[in-house]
Image (cartoon, rainbow, N blue to C red; front, side, top):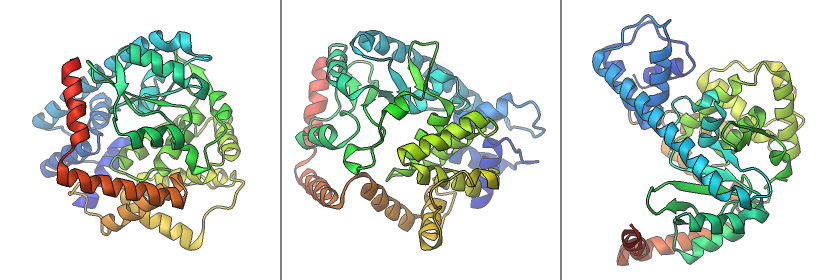
Length: 377
């Protein structure tokens, strides 16, 4: 049943519909799709596909309709927020604001926007513009989402973004980036390569062009240490790949950008697990475009063990053996990718100490943050 539900879900997401779905399977499908932040996407596909010949039970239909309404409202709010934020900070920028990830899918009209719900809006600006942008956003009502002196230092010295900013009334969270991966990782790319890989939108902001959008999504997924939404992110990659797979110009640009930024391995991993998990057809000539040697042997076996499990749908109804071990290995791998070992040890020790202190004394920092927010509201 577990494998069956994931197979049915993947079949719907890739528009390869099952002949029939039982009442129990419909129930489990809704539960698993919702847990993986994919119910709006499933709903959009099912309700807008006139070719499916199976019956959707009335109670399931109600869930699907409700989720599509939520998606429409959410996307309208995202677009409105981006317009307002851009109007407040555009005069401080030396180039147009770039919108990344989920919000980028929405404003670009990408097929990956279908059913996409997310918790924050990711923005990319020049590093030299960060101080001006931050001041403008503070004046506009956005305040830092962390009061920890250590976290502030971590973001500003080691990370690729400033601490998240939350609007004190609306609750909107902005992640303002100046790079796509942590600087301390030693693999942060020359951002001119991404800054020159953009296109305009009707909302006065830019997004990454399709090839760069796919590569950034792959980097974000396979540079991560936590995969709660890994299955959803793989679904994003599936839709993004559909937009470029038959466009030789974009496909060539994708491989060129991956080579020049040093992310061929992340591109390979995206292709491999789209094949292994989402059953995408990746032709041999595509793999022949890679310039660097592809992973083999133990390295490839370890990758298959980790990602074959952590990228499965995340729900108790999808029983994956050794998922816990794979999640732990992925957690360690992600942190080692993001920071050198000596900094990782220091960072882990501090987080452990703070966790112990909080468990004994209570979350003092968070209580103070809530109290200040209440006063401002």
